[in-house]
Image (cartoon, rainbow, N blue to C red; front, side):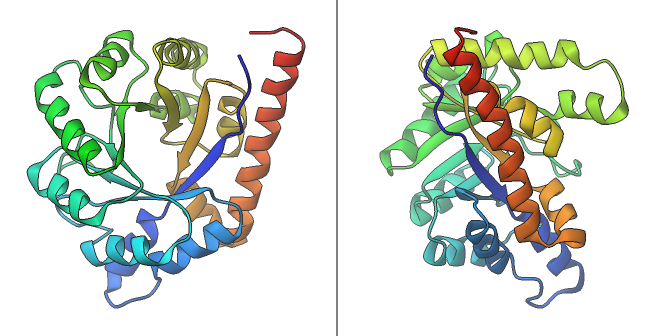
Length: 257
């Protein structure tokens, strides 16, 4: 298959987490978004949670007005969030599972078990001109459900694989699941993204999968930004992804699937 360029979406949620810990306006997640874009990010992701624990409504409104790259709004499939998205009209909306008790998104959406409800949400957002993705595990049942629901894009949850890599545990089976899931989704006509828990090395490896055309990365980049500066962290991530993509292109030229 042809190897397309791979995009980097930078999630700026945890800049807002730091701001909210003390209140006020500093650090400003919008300023972080602009710095990420200047360093090579292709888009910005922000998760507007029901409890507003980090990003708040005013943040997404200012992001939409000020940033010069696409805004991807992560959101739960609730009437409140659908209303906000339809009013805001971000470039894209990624439907994610959400529980108040979780520290961060813990797994993929159960698209297979919520097909009727999700079909309505996807339809409403699409009618507003918003590109919709579903954040799911790389499981055949979930991918097949995404097709039936009518979502044009999926984002594969990479957290289990990244956790295994970080812990030094066997990770080959988890990575193989991602490989097979990306291939299945691509063959079904879905655009394939990936994210959650990625660092420089795991992003480089997953960027070598030609079926995946976008990575969304946040927590790691914000953490690295504390030490190296956010711009430097984004540039390093962009370089790691480009190295992985170069391997994919070389494999394609050599006839390697």
